[in-house]
Amino acid sequence: MTPEERRAFGGRIAELREARGFTQKELAAEIGRTASWLSQVERGVQPVNRIDVLRLLADGLGVSVQEIRPDMPAEPTPPEKNEPEEPNDLDQARLLISGHPVPEVLLGSGASGPEPSPQQLSEAVDHIWELTHENRFTELSAELGPLIPRIERATRTAPPKRQPEFYSVLARTYQALAAAFVRQDEADAAWVAADRAICAAEHSGRPLEVFAGVFRLSQAFVRLKRFDQAEHAATTALNALETYTARREEPEALSVTGALFLALALVHARAGERAKARLALSEAKCVADRLGEDRNDYNLEFGPTNVAIQTVSIAVELSDAGEAIERGMEIDASGLSTERRARLLMDMGRAYAQRKQSGEALTALLQAEELSPELIHTHVAARDAIRDLVLVAGRSASPELKELAVRADAQP
View 1 (cartoon, rainbow, N blue to C red):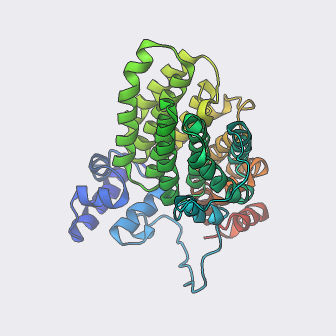
View 2 (view 1 turned 30 degrees about the vertical axis):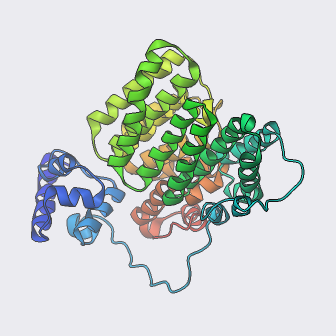
View 3 (view 1 turned 120 degrees about the vertical axis):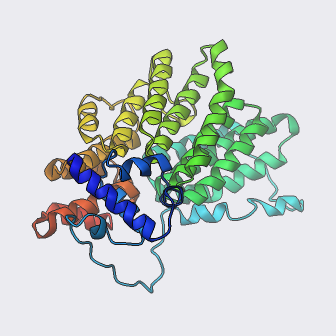
């Protein structure tokens, strides 16, 4: 957009907002952005080029995307659906958190027999995290079905001196479930799982487990577009950790601190707070430099490489596609999990899509799909990018792009 086009676009947004009786604060709250971001848009300072953000504005104003940007391709009206929604890969896991995990234990009628040791359960949870990092959600849901009640029962029936060990295993289990729910855009379920992880971690007597749970909670709030809650959760945790990490260079504490700064950067980026997002990223990089290596404490995968990956993701969120591509080309993520490597490729695809480099975008998304099909087929950002590529290409969309859109259920 030229400066003149930005001012004209901003004026159109302001007119539509006023015609519907919204204040800037009210419309910003409706679309999950800040009033300052909306003010910058209306004054022509903040460009809006991404289709998903345009769609967000249009939905908030109750108009079509074409009414605020006549040059955008028309989106066909989806047919009404009377059939039930398709099952989600984590539907079985949702059932697990829909009530008390082992109500029979409350009545003293739980299953008898030898209870598993914390070590045995911990090994099972290690496998759960492998499935989570690889985005194998169907297998994850199936394995959690019997495992969570087993851990919950063992935790409640263990001798008091051993209960903290079981609670630590339970906290790790719910953290994995919260992470999986976030990636499948099941944010309400992620909130419940993260809250249970925090509660179990507190009983374990391991405070850093609590802060790892807060990181999962902030991610759930971001997916719910509850940016104020996400910021509050991350900020209060960081404030508590500040004094702790100032006194010692404990790697685990640094990992949690750095991960929370990355969470805060995402919160600010999603809210359109560019300066705050950059500051939080800078803080995360400082922590990563102190840590000096890539680690996987509490399955956070924090370290210099993950900070670099998140820098690409934040740049995409801020529509700085050129920076995202430049930074992404420099990253060697081979030492990280399948999910992190696929996420980098997904964000590169989104960045290329923002630059209207459709061929490069498709290549990156296909490479990400090869690594982690479930990520590309279920992640909201990936599906939005694929849908936008099809819309822009129109009738000239390649067979590969059309087939990808079918596999990801991302047809316009």
